[in-house]
Length: 288
Image 1 (cartoon, helix red, strand yellow):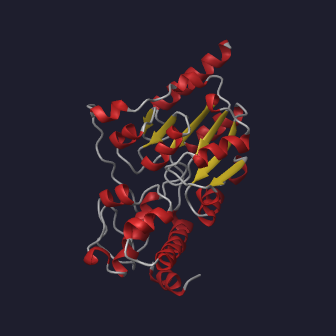
Image 2: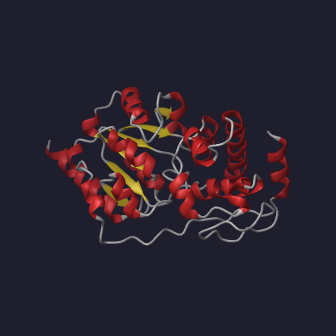
């Protein structure tokens, strides 16, 4: 583990204030963080209606489900935000002014580290940018080992999937170490029949390649496969792969997910809107 990460580890003793929309404190804190979702609007923009969305009911009989990891299985975006916020301040990013949640959502959330490096450090040498991001991920894993928690209702949905014998894969832009830590911490490593990493694809999300690879590994039909996502980047990837996407508002406001092409937007896996759709899929499948 990098020495700076070890130094940060020893600093985490005091309670951490609840994270709202920005990061104003340094790393001598513990972790109690959450995002406050941007209020959703019932008046979607014309742009949000211009994206062609596949009907979820058209998937019956459902064959497979592809899950993103960060923000979709676990509420990890606040930890990524904290790690970026702290480390960017250390290198003097933006004149030392802390990034806020809006910047994180627009520039960082759901994106592959190669793309994040280009956005954050256009003047840095690639190797310097990669080194920063490797250390950021190590710092994130330190935080996640203490505080990672499942999205509400996750285990209820897991049982629903298992009871129906559906194929399932995790599809993520996260580094392998992060993905393994998340699945292990949540106790769902064995639940997945395949794990697809953006690093192992020719192109990561928002391109469709990771989801297309997930379909191939599961030998699943795109006509009967559903995606769960939480980021704009991931939602665009699922839509580009020709799959309907259920998007969670764990880290992004509803209107952005709608604009990205989500067929359904939910708060978490206990959302009545989700279970209404799943019950409809069961009813349709029973008639076939």
